[in-house]
Image (tube, rainbow, N blue to C red; front, top):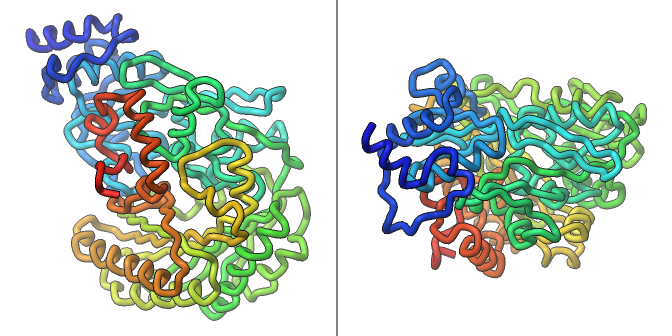
Length: 510
């Protein structure tokens, strides 16, 4: 423990780590991860769980995708911003690698977990503070979407957050599509304040008037600038309920569903911004069957869909759960049937809305998936999500993000975000299918380019591990992010010590 005491003294003492300043790299002696965990346990007795304990096992496996189950050296569960700040000071002083886990809903390996480092779940930062006068809710970054809906439903309010109850707060630094997306824009542009622990252990509030450069950078910049501990979200009034549910369609109805998808992208979502649909195609490799299943929502307390959305129920379907209900109830139903801890792969790209392309991409994906029926538990998911001009105008009227979509404010063309997801039972099959999946998605990008329909934006929250999401924001935005990094993280702590997730691209790579 002599080395541990010396390393701890390098950062002063645990009690003094709150005000810790980053040492020059030449003065830092890197600690092996076990010693980092020992230092952490010394500073925070009772908050650190070593490898192999029950807490370690649960937190290491509590992920949506098995690709995130890694081998951290210990788990640190902070219950306050102050503890996060002290821990970051310790990590920096001793060059300790760590991960930041919110809801754990990424499929990118080590996005929220780590091998031979400290896993830091934010789950105990789970308070909500509703401010009715300010029209906001202050939310801990350990919350899930269900917690926010449950806090706001009794007040006839909601926030621009994720639609599925188990999704975490990471979308507030990625992009984020809510039920009100068509009217209110991206989730990141409905964040009023980020409480952030910086690389030097200090805590700042980033908003329109305080650290506005950091505020903008976090709106799409992911985990590259600090540890966000709380986010204050704008709220909007509701009618106390929403009309929505899931409509399931047989394979024979898929051509009509595809027509509805294009109509939703270019007419329904444009003419009535209270509409929201999440069109999805699913392929079950075990049964060799395909269906379409679409969450269909109208953001009012009505008893049936308005005329503009009637096509979703006029198309022959096998089941509908549409009804008037609280938002929390809707979020729970949408997540039902999506199990945790299976192997997941996500990829995404963006196009200009086009009916023929939508039809051709699904046909190609369906054909490709059928070649992989031998993979146990194979399920293919294709989702087509619109970004309308309405949603972009709403976003950019509220704040400035780094997503690089402002050029689309005036062209009056809907963008389509095309998502490709794989689920399977075993990691043993990933070496065979995932490279082929990447190749297939690239072929669809090439198809879109050949028709002059491709758009460079890659939505970070749905991106694959090797997709250059942040680089897709464009040179000006990437250059701005470098400037923010230089100002707030000059020694690149959140690149070097937090290796997981979508990172700032290497200079010259974009």
